[in-house]
Amino acid sequence: MKKWHLILAAAAVLSLQAPVMPAEAADVAVPDDIFQWVQSTARQNYYFNKQQIKYGIDAQGNVDLNTLIVPTLRTYDDIQIRDVVTKRRWKMLSVKGYERLIGSAKYLKFNLKAQTVQIVEQDDLDDTFTSINQDLDPEPAVNYATLSEKDVDGCFYRAIIKYAQKHQDELIERTGAPLSKADVVALGKAQPDQGNHKHKKG
Image (cartoon, rainbow, N blue to C red; front, side, top):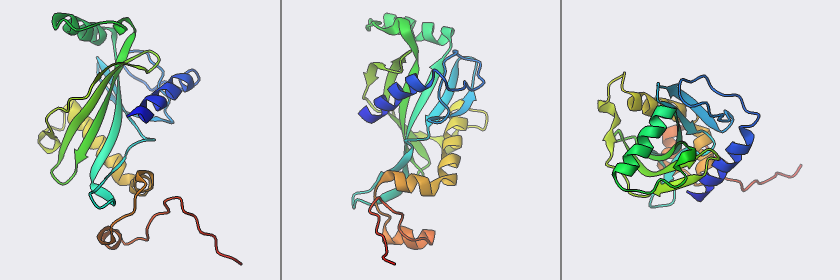
């Protein structure tokens, strides 16, 4: 997850010139070349990192087309920020650094066959997109297929899956592993270039 924190730090620098997506929540500049905006509510903006979304890798070292790994970003409005801080105080947790809270990073793991999604890590972020608190305890998996069309999280999850389907070749290449022979046949394509470029003579 350290690489994601570096991307967030870069995003904080880029955001000085990056356009801000229309939203109702906190006025935080988020670079749209790194993050894909999906939706906004009165309390939060929902993004995912389109530079890091990728497939998992199976036990054989091949691309696992059944698993999606997705870093996401949520920015908060002032009311949501106060709510987070208040709940931490109720629980007698540290609020150091929370005067600069702007949102959270949630790392999602999708099981496309089972139609489930799990939050495997969460970070609270300050206004430099630096983690001020990290929660490494995975949450129970949720069956996104059972969420209604109007459910905010359900809409977010479905948008991510649609993006992944549309950019499958890009995600396969980013995953950095070969396709299994069965997937090569099923997809009807040659293996993607994993960086070992071979040049033909003449």
